[in-house]
Length: 231
Image (cartoon, rainbow, N blue to C red; front, top):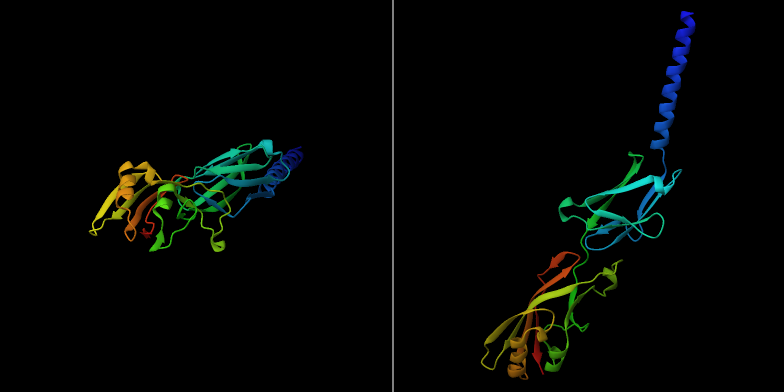
């Protein structure tokens, strides 16, 4: 009788360990994919599309969480968006997968800033010391945009806004009058506009400098100044 009890107990113990081992193996061997649709990098200030696929489970049973950012679902099954990356979170964002509160996988992505924009006048890039007509400066707005250099191609559509800049104009005596413009056009500062109309004579130099550009919650500055000569 005692031998039978010992035998039965041993079988039950072995069965329990076998079930636990099988359950752990199922969790550990789950096949999953966490991939950025565009690049294996996530960027500040953009919606980063992330594809999540888990084998053997319905995605409705999977919780997707992110460390150092926010994540949201989309209308496309298994497609998520990582956004609002915390600048203080470090250089890595980690996405974790859970099934019934049990972690089944994760993947980490490097975090980078979007490329610094380039300054132009409504798409017209003025070279240093180039000669321009005053009418162009009066009519054009200063914009910041992605570089069109093929070597700096960016996978995302990204919007920048020129918040302010400094405009300086040289008069006949060589003196410099300086104006802070809040906006992206001389039309945003009446004094600067009138100064250009009054003192903007052929041969005089004008300067655009101290640009402040915002994009994706990031402030960009330290752009090179632009000096042109009026025709």
